Amino acid sequence: MKGQGFETFLQGNLCPRLYKGKVVVMDNLKIHKSVKVQQMITDTGAKLLYVPRCSPDFKPQTAVAIQQVLRIFLLLLDKSFFKNWFAQCCYSTS
Image 1 (cartoon, one colour):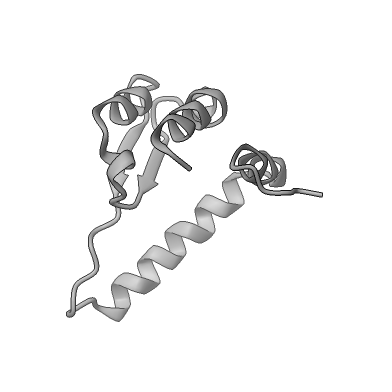
Image 2: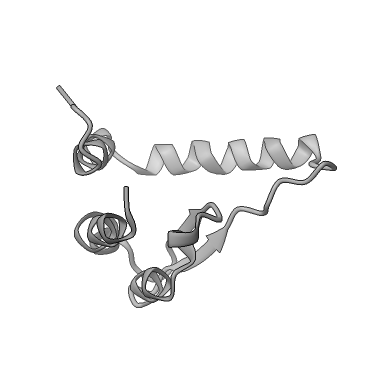
C-alpha cells in the first residue's frame, strides 16, 4: 500500500472509529510517521504510539507485553474491520 492509499484507509476506516481515549499503535514505517497521518489520528482525540525499534537486547518480557496489547486490540475490533481492511488493500476477502 502506498502513502496515499494508507491515508485513504485511515480517513475512511480507522479515523471514524477513533475518539479521545483510544490509542493507535503503529510500527516505524515511513508513511506511519508522516505529519499528515499523525495529524489525522490526533485530530480524532486518539493518542498515537509507535512500537519501539527492535534491538539486539530485545527483552522477552517486552515481547510478552506486546502480545498482551495485541490480544486486547484484537478483542476490541470486530471481524468486519479486518475484512474491510484487507479489501481496502486489494486482497480477496471471499
